Length: 204
Image (cartoon, rainbow, N blue to C red; front, side, top):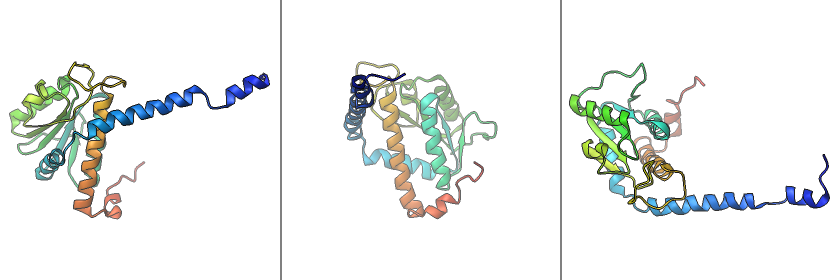
């Protein structure tokens, strides 16, 4: 089918859809900029100290938070840490002194909440990444790092966001963890790409 010339120009020229996409990016950047300004070096150092002190590191999160935490643990493996994901068949028994990381924006997600309780019982260290310090996970973790952002609960005290519920917390936590990875990459490996890539999988 051949469109009339006027319609062809409208069809192939820049449309409001492009502007809407640009506006969406600007909206996200604006929201993140305000939130990231509230993160402190002390928060990063707290996580680094816990990670470096642990003989083994376990991670537990679900949904999109689960993908983000897995990505962080993958980088820790690249940096030479021993890491495991809760729920995998090859994940060993948690021992006293091990570190469990949990990530939940609401702080009430059932699986990480119950796994954290189990870890506390066996004498492991527990650290939570959450937007809700007064939640069950926020209260019961031995160390809680609060990443302010919107959660799936969209509570009144959460920062304003036009994004889907939970997205702002997830984006901010991803960038926070990536910043921690960058610090560890510099301190442990001196930005040595070869040493890091020596642990990167070749079965892909």
